[in-house]
Length: 260
Image (tube, rainbow, N blue to C red; front, side, top):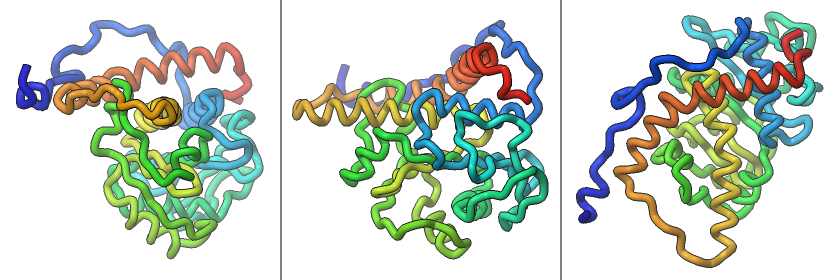
C-alpha cells in the first residue's frame, strides 16, 4: 500500500455502521444528575486535581450554564450541589458560590457556539506534558479523536479570574477542542455532555501513553492519517455514548448518592 492510499481519509462512525440495539443507561437523569455524574466519572478516571477544576454545560437554546460550586471536590459532588450561572457568571440558582475562574468558561462559551460543554482541570499526565511545553504525540488509536483538534497555550499568566483575561485565553484557544495550558492544565470542549466527558476522560491517558513512549527515546510506530480520520469519527459518534453509559451505570451502582 503506497503512502497516498494510506493517507486517504477512511470512512468511519455512523456513516459505516450503527448498532441496532445498545444496553440502556438504566436511569432517567435530570440535567443536574447527569452533570454530577460527569464530575464523578472524571474524578474516578484521575482527571481531577483535588479541589481544582470546573465543568460548565450550556444547554441547547440558552446561555445560562450549569456548573459546580466552589468548595466541593468533584468526587463528592451531588446533583443538588449543581449551580446555574448566567453568561456573565452571576449565580442564578443553587446553594453555593462559584469561583471567579468561571470566566474561563463564560468567555469560551461566548466565543464558541460549538462549545456547549467546557471541562477544565489539571490531570497529572497532562500537566507533565504542559510542564515540558509539548502536546501529546498520538501513539494509540484512541488518540485519533484529537487529530487536528489540539492547541498548546504556552504563556502562563497566573490565575484567570476576569472576563478580560478569559477572553484573551479564548482567543488563544481559537477553534481547538483541546487546549493544553503551559504549566497549568487542560481545557476540553464538546457539543454535548457525553462527547465532552469521553474526550476529557481519554485525554490524560493519551498524555500518559505519549510520555511513556517519549522517555523510551525510541521512535513510535506512526498511524496513517487516513486511518485516524475514520477512527476519529467512530470514537466520537459511537464510542462516546458507549463509554458514557458504562461509566454512569458503574458510578450509580457504586455511588448512588450522586443523584441526590
